[in-house]
Length: 322
Image (cartoon, rainbow, N blue to C red; front, side, top):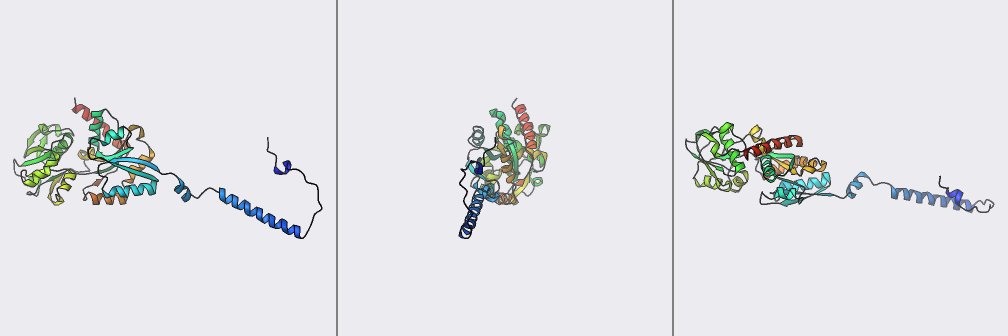
C-alpha cells in the first residue's frame, strides 16, 4: 500500500484570492530558503569521501610475538601497517625461544615471527601442535668463522672446529661443514644429523653450547667455529672472517627460511597474509639489512609452498624420533 503524500493528507485550506506584489516577493524568498535548507540536508547526509571513510574506520589490532622488538625494522613495519593496512601492530617480545609458539597456540598473540621452518617443525611434532607458516621473511646463512685461516681448504688436518650442540643448529652446522668438504655425513645428512653421523672428517668436530662458540674462537681454543648470527653480532665478529656458510638458494637451506606463523585456523586469513607480505616492502627490507649487518637473504614463497615444506620436515622429525 502506498503512503499518502503530504498533499493528500494535509487539511484543505479555504480558497483565497491570489495576491500580487509584496506577497509574490515573499514567496520567492521563502522558496529560496527552502531550496537552501534542502541542499544543506543533502550535503549533511551525503556519504563521506573514501579518504574520510578510511580515517573513520576503526583500526584492527594484530599482536605479533617476536624476539627482537627493539630493532629498527619493526618500527618501520608497524608504521607501514598502520598507514597501508589500517592495522595497529602490537609487538610482544620474548627473550626465551621456547615461549612464542605456546603463546600463539594459546591465543595470547595472533602471529609470530622469530623462527625458521625447521624450528617450527620440531615444535609442532614435540608438542602435538599444528601452527602454520603464512609468509617467508629471510634466510640467515650459518657462517663458519676463522681468525687465522682464510679458507676452509687451508684448515690443517685435525684442526678443531666448534659447532653448536643443540639438535637443530648442530645438524645445520654439520651440513655446512659437509658442503665445505670438511666432513662426510651418513646418507648425505639430514636436518636431524648429529656428530655421531660423521663417517669421515678432515677436522675435529667439537660440539659446544651455541653461546660459547664465538668465545672458543676468540680465545684460540679452536681453529674455526660455526657461530649463529646473533652471537656473532654480539661478539663483533667481522664478515671478513667468514670462510664458509650454507647457500641460501640451495635445497639444504630451505628448512631455515624464517617465517611468519599463525594458528592453523587462521592460516588463510587475508589480513595476516598481507602483513607477512608487508615485510618485503623496500623500506622494511632496507631496515632489516641495516639491523642485521647485511646478513639477511630475503626469500619469498607462497603459504602453500611453505606449508608443504613444513609437512616434509615434520615427517622427518617424526621419523627421527622413532
